[in-house]
Amino acid sequence: MKKFFIVFACLIGLFLTACQQEDNQQAEDHANKQQEADQPTKDELDDSKNNKEEETNKHIAKIEEETGLHVVDNPESELVYVNKQRKLPTGYVPPNLTVPDVPHFSKEGNPKRQLQKSAADALEELFAEAQNNGIGLVAVSGYRSYERQESIYSSIVDTKGQDHADKYSAKPGTSEHQTGLTMDVASATETVSTLLEESFSQTDAGGWLAEHAHEFGFIIRYPKGKEDITGYSYEPWHIRYVGHEVAQTIYQKDITLEEYFGYDYE
Ligand SMILES: [Zn+2]
Image (cartoon, rainbow, N blue to C red; front, side, top):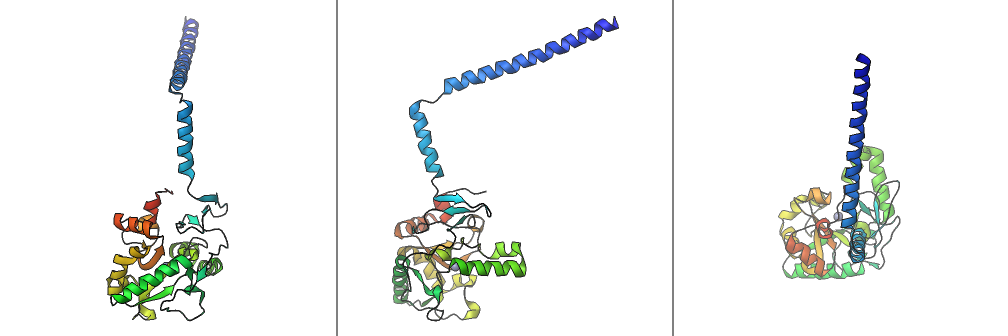
């Protein structure tokens, strides 16, 4: 009797298992049918392909193996977009570097006086208009080469470690200063000790710059309250040339370049 019970139990077990398999098979069949019913038409397929291309057209040439950073494919565009995830090609040097005819803080001949021609012209107009309004500005730091950024970064890694370097310095290729479209500016009256401090935003010059930079195609690249989005602390002195139209939009919508492009990075 006991033997019979065991055999019976086994049979039940087999039966249950088979049923479950059948259930699974039915579910699978159902899913397949559903998929067939949902099969997109050729037009829909083409549409989704286009959308995907748009989605992936983020001006990325490749993802760099050793750093995991996205290398941009449009370094010469005035809309080139670099940040802690996106970098310029190694060794990139912008075209048309020129010294804008404005007061400079650095000594004559210093490469940091330079900007790309379009940004330099716009900076001259901005400085002239500031002057007309009784605001004296000085250009502190513009173009910075890949090599220079590399040596700044690696010396911080050597002395203070990788974490500190990543927090306070841009990895080579990720500094906006390498684009030749960025200038750090200060009040003409400032000395070395007050240069490039957050308190600049409280000065007449800082206030004027925040309100008028966009009229000349510049944005305040790292605004207050957007540190989580840009990855950088508030820098009221760091202006980036993006052209009139985009600067206007970014100013009016009160957004960052990250929000303007809307690309997501984890
Ligand atoms: Zn800067």
